[in-house]
Amino acid sequence: MSFNEVYSGKRVLVTGHTGFKGSWLTMWLLSLGAEVCGISMDIPTAPSLFEMAGLEREIEHHIADVRDLDALALIINSFRPDFVFHLAAQAIVSRSYQDPVNTVTTNVIGMACMLDVLRRCKWPCIAILVTSDKAYENVEWLWGYRETDRIGGRDIYSASKGCAELIIHAYYHSFFRDKGSTVRIGVTRAGNVIGGGDWALDRIVVDCMRAWSDGGIVTIRNPTATRPWQHVLEPLSGYLWLGRVLLNRSALDGEAFNFGPRTEQGRTVIEVVQALGRQWGFSNDAKIYQVVDNAPFNEAGLLNLNCDKALFHLKWEPTLSHEECIRFTGGWYRSVLKEGGDARVLTMAQLDEYQGLASHRQRIWCKGTL
Ligand SMILES: NC(=O)c1ccc[n+]([C@@H]2O[C@H](COP(=O)([O-])OP(=O)(O)OC[C@H]3O[C@@H](n4cnc5c(N)ncnc54)[C@H](O)[C@@H]3O)[C@@H](O)[C@H]2O)c1
Image (cartoon, rainbow, N blue to C red; front, top):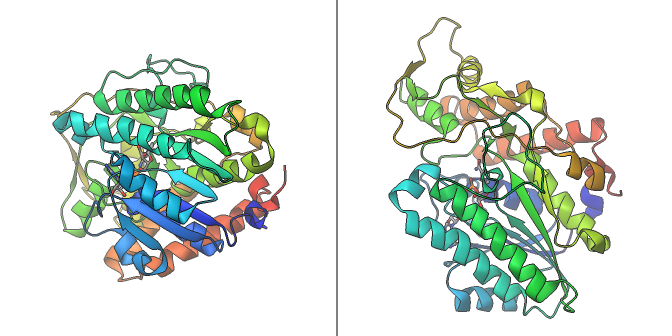
């Protein structure tokens, strides 16, 4: 009864479907019986979960730029999605320093183009728009950010996500709210996610796996920085559940929701590297990392999300413990990179295990009704 079977037989558009989160989301939607259409500019990494899992054969796969309004309109108007999950973005913080304009146009103009197509929709549609925890103005405090906190950003990636939020807000009030629109909108802000099948640059888990599978050691820059680690399936359960809830809760139309781990799940970079090392099979005294002090760009400090709003309105809360998150993530890479496991089989097995744990722990989206 996950999500009350609402996705079964539905047409679902996923932008950014070839990326890390998009590949997991596409697989989850396919397993729920959805007909999936994907729009991405490219397959951003080699290898990629998208290709390893052979997803292109199972969906309507489009290579297009979300900044191309006409191309976006053509695809959306012919597919006529019941649900849209807009994930496409320039999502790599380090790249935003190398190519700021591309980051801004993709994340801001791309969002505007999506909203511009949606505002002309004549059929009922739920759109889940993905920004980031980095959309908040980071004032380096220890408390979790709430949905009412200020949007901002001192680096380009964060600012681009903050701008995307402003664009959503303006479009929503100009064209959707009380304007007879057939589209309902949910805005989602999640933090850094980890999990098997990510191959993007400058992400600590990926750096570990690349280094260790090449027989090397990983270089880390901020060993004592604490991050709110969460498995990729956690925010995805929130996105899917928000889509389901918006179907019959018009009062939540246009609302933003944080989806993050519990505060006690925060760990330092070094703790996570060591835990992943144990998953990989290293002994406790093995030298598996080196610390360097040459950060190529400024990284924001502590940034936690307060998820009380998701708990209150959606009854959503995370499912996995930190240890389970590490086991899922490290186990995936060990199996695929060291033991020759099949990425698709493993991903589906983890999806099943995750849903089993969520059901056992009585997560609301497994029951299907609020
Ligand atoms: N991964 C994280 O830790 C994290 C954390 C917070 C928010 N997010 C957000 O979640 C979403 C997905 O992140 P991810 O980690 O899967 O990203 P990713 O880098 O793995 O994938 C990005 C996807 O966007 C597509 N894309 C990029 N530019 C495009 C364009 N101009 N037109 C069409 N498609 C384009 C790529 O082809 C790819 O499919 C992004 O919006 C990202 O900002 C991610």
